[in-house]
Length: 345
Image (tube, rainbow, N blue to C red):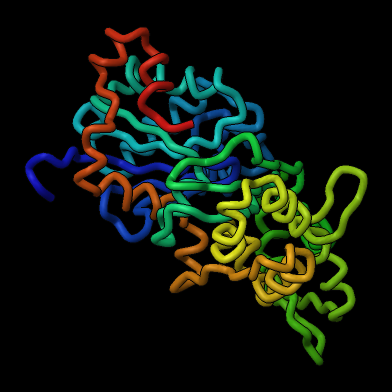
C-alpha cells in the first residue's frame, strides 16, 4: 500500500447475501445473509432463530436495519468505521434509497470517505475488462447491462423480476421439520445446488438430506426446473433474449465488443452446464456479424464474488484515490449532489 492510498472497506450488499472485505483482498473476509431477526441477529445467526420471523433488509429497503447491518459489518471486519473509507456497490432500486444510505454512512456510521458504482461495472473490472455485456442473475431479479469504458449504460439496461431463488420452489416439498421460513428456504436452496444441472445425465441425481434420507430426481424433472431462466412467459422473455435486446439496442461501434465479452454472474451462473447453454442459445440469436464469447473466470468463487472482486481491484488503483467523496465535501457541497457528480451513474 503506498502512502497516498486510502485504507478502505469494499462491500457488496445484495438482496440475499452481503460480502465485505478490504481493498486488495482476493475474496470477501465476511459473507453472510442480508437478513436479520427482530432481536438484531444478522445473517447466519438468524438460521437458528427457531420459528421467529426473519426480516428482509432490502426487500423492501429498511433504513434502520441497513444501518445496523453496516455497523455489524465493520464490527465483523474488526475495524472502526471512522478509520476506514467505504466503496459500496450500487444495486439500489431508487435514488432515494441510495441517498438515505449515504446520509447514514456519513452522519451515523461516520466513515471519512465514500464511493459507489454500479454492480455491472464492478463485475466488468473483476474480469479485467472495461467494456462487457453483463448478465447478473440475482436472488430475486435478473439484470442485463452493457458496460462501456467502465460506465454502465443505464438507458439500455433491462431488469426482470425473476432470479435464482425461483429455482428453489420445486425443492421445498422435500424440506420437512420445524423450521422458520428462512431456514426452509436455505435447505431448499441446498438441495437445488446439489441436484440441479444443465448437463445431460444418464442416471438419477440424488441428494442426501440432513436426516439421512435421499431425494432422487430424473433428468427431465431437473431440466424443466432449470429452463425457467431461459423459457419465456407473460412476465419474462428469457435471459438470452434480455441479452439480445441489449445488443440490438447498442450502437454499432460496440456491438461486437459486447458480444465477445459476455460475463454471467450470480450463483445460478455456476450451475453445471449453464454457461454452455447460455453460449449456445445466445449464439443462435445474435446478429450474423457478432460472434458470442463468454468470459471464463478462474473459479466459481470468482464468478460468485465478482462484484466484490471488482470493487477490491478498483479501490486499490492509484488513479482511483482522487475519486473518493470526503465527508467534508459531502457536508459543504449540497450533500447528495456531490455523490451524483463524482460517482458514475
